[in-house]
Length: 171
Image 1 (spheres, rainbow, N blue to C red):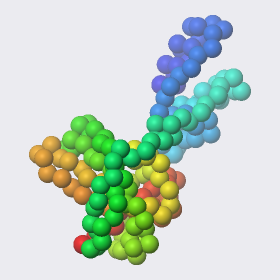
Image 2 (image 1 turned 90 degrees about the horizontal axis):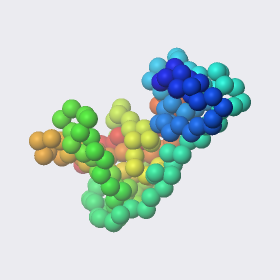
Image 3 (image 1 turned 90 degrees about the vertical axis):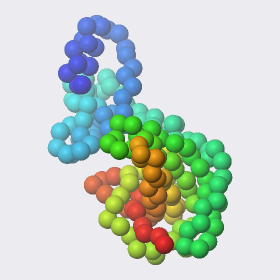
């Protein structure tokens, strides 16, 4: 990607351009998202162009949304207001069609001591902003129509340098 950008940009002469890329590519001091061993695209472009490049992560704008409705979900024998934030297409994932996201309001204190599972969902997987002290329900609908319900807790967990929620078990 970096080589393609440089090649095409050089053809423009003295023109200014704006590129729109996913946040995994835009950090001027960041390494690649998966291995953390290769400078990401933004980092490589800054090395090539110096102070002539500017990068800004705008992904938060897409997540600055209000819930579209409030449902009620029972967990551990208690009913919680559940803010619904929508559906995310998962057709690119084997056996999954989509997943839906709810935030259980005022559930953290009741839930925080439940058994945790060694499974994490990074904040950037969510459709909305995540804060420490929140509880989430994620329903993943499979291509066969079955639904897998998972519960996640936001307690400030960082996994491989990424803020993440952690799955917990509920009865």
